[in-house]
Length: 100
Image: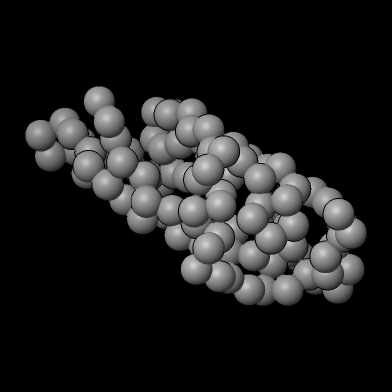
């Protein structure tokens, strides 16, 4: 597949394509999402942090579902990418639900 140029873009199909092969590793304060970008097909890990500051959670439980904005942060060079950016520019939302 030819390398795509950097372009800040989203599409309705990105979330479904991304989650099809997604692996989620739970961490103490969030999760690491490991998958491939639905636009450029490059693999990457995206770290989601639930909390920036530690504080007691009411009832000791987290929310059952959360919408996480994800953006491609692959290390593949994409023509036209600004020096202070990562990835190909694609972004989408993923809903994470705790199953246990």
